[in-house]
Structures are given as C-alpha cells and as structure tokens.
Length: 397
Image 1 (cartoon, rainbow, N blue to C red):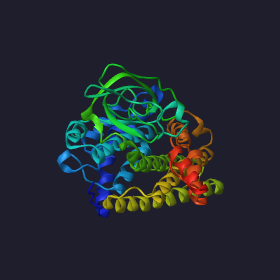
Image 2 (cartoon, helix red, strand yellow; image 1 turned 180 degrees about the vertical axis):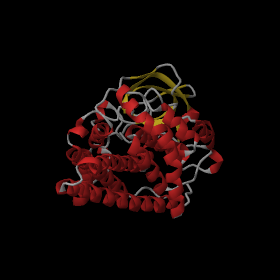
Image 3 (spheres, rainbow, N blue to C red; image 1 turned 30 degrees about the vertical axis):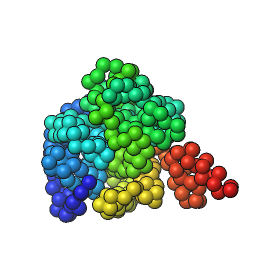
Image 4 (cartoon, rainbow, N blue to C red; image 1 turned 90 degrees about the vertical axis):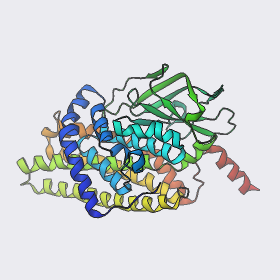
C-alpha cells in the first residue's frame, strides 16, 4: 500500500472537512443513538460517501491515499462527538485494509469500490471459547464444491446485523494447528446470518453483539489469499489496534471539552478545579503526541512491505492500554469537576459510560499487559500456543 505522507496543512484541511460532517450529522445523532441503542447508519453512509471509509485506498478504488496520522486524526475527531461511530468506522477501515493488502483485484472492485457509495464492512474474529484472545479460532471451514461452508458463532462483532460484509476468521478445513487460518469475505445479505442483541453500558451504538453464521456458503473467490494466510494477516494487524487507541484519545478529548466548558460557567474560581483540569490536559497532550509518533512509525513501516515487527506490535498494545486508561482517568476528573451536573443524563454522562468500554475491548488491557510484559522479560510472545510449546522444547534440548 503506497501512502503519501501528508503536509501539515493537509491535516488542517482534514479537520475542517470533518468538522462540517461532525457538526451536521454525527454530533446531533450521538445522544439519540445512546438513548435508543440505535446503530449510526447515517453517520457511516456520510463518511463513506465523502471518502473517509476509503482513507488508505488508491484513487482508482475511490480512495483518498492518506497516511496513518490522517487516519488517527479522523478517528480522534469522530470519537470526540460519538465514540460508537469512531469504533464502527475503525473496524470498517480495518476490514477494507485486510481486503486491500491480502485480497485480489476482483475483490477490490466488488467490495472496496462500493465504500464510496456508503457501503461498509467489519471484522469478525473473536469466539466465546478463545477467552479474549481474538486471534484464536476454534471454528473450522468445511470444503463444499467450489467454495466453503461456514458454521460458526462470533462473540463480539462490531456493526453486527448492519455491516454489508464481514471479514471473518476461521480455521482452514484441514487445519492441524491453531494458526492454520483463513479469512473470508461474507456477504451480509445471505440467509442464515443472525445477529444477537446489543444492550450495553456504553458505546450503545457500536452493536458488538454475537453473530451466528449458519450454513453460509462462501465461494473460493471470496477467500482472502490462500488457506493459512490468516496467520500472517493476524500477525500484521495494525489498523484496528491503532484506530482503537485513537478512538479513546478522542473520547478523552471530548470528555475534557465538556468538563472545561462547564467549569468556565460555574466552578473555575476554585483552585482544585483548575488543577484537575490541568492534570487532564497534560495527560491528553502527552497521549496525542505519542499517537503522532506511532503514526510516523507506521508510515515508515508500511513503505517497507515487511512483516510488522514485534516491537511495533507491542507498542500498539501499549498505546491502546494507555489511551483507554487515560480516557477513564479524564472521565473521573471531569465527573469531579462537573459534580452533580456531570452525573445527570447528558453528554458528559454518556461519554463517561462510553470510556469504560476501552478497558475490556479486545485485546483487554489485562491481556495486552501480559503480552507487553512477556516482551519486557524476554518470554516468547508468539500468539500461537503450539509455537510456544515447540520453542520451549527446542530450548530444553
């Protein structure tokens, strides 16, 4: 994927263009989506039609050919108004990136070009039995004629029941190890796809409910790469992780703006209030600077066409953990600053609930810290149990 590193003035133009969409469509919808638990379908359609869903894609596919700093900025700006929309958008861009990186030209034209018409997709990875390790799949595709048969339930699927297509992970038909994996593009219009109910504490428009794929046929032409390619795709996943971190940075900024606006009207005369706002501002600014640095590293890496280094993958885990924890710290500070006003139903209360999702969203912070800690002390960090056991056996010899 050839990306062009943008000039500073481009980022200003991006923010200006997004502000119009956010003020006209996304922000006015946010409280209603939360109250009703509705899906942000209108938001996604507008973002797609304006080209933001095709942010990394080349112009011949309707793309904007923007870089990772631009992507992080887009996610961050959306999340300030509506974290649910930011998460749905991130998964859509992540699904498109998998198809573009590992799919073929036929798949690009059939699934990626329609993004500019407001169509969108999502990624279906996690299963109940994997215990939060979303890269482990216990289900298995079956060979059938000139394609495959899928019988699988995915436990948390963003945009469940609303996406136009699912980029679904499962084991290859004859897999003997957990990392013999396949990704398939599944047309969401097929009979036999049933989404569960999403009724959550926060990010209520996110719709990350279970999805059951019952006797779903996928033609060979919608297998992404060869059988076994899924392992490489999982190991090189970066769009989702980076976008997830950016979403929680944006959520923290949105919470802070609400609290600061309230303080200016009522409580700014108190030193303790000003000190708490200063603490929140420092956290946000340091995190935003880190986001830009990680984006620059991703821009450099993508040009090399090499596998994602363990160091960079671990850095993305760190970013996701710190961003989600910062959003929660800022939420707590803002609730203290706003007092009883912040506790009433409204924008600050909604963002406070939304921020809680970041702690448990895959990879959960506990799991991510375990992966980070393993790298720190030199323990094998492979995602695949069989590989770890094999490495340990070889060391004993």
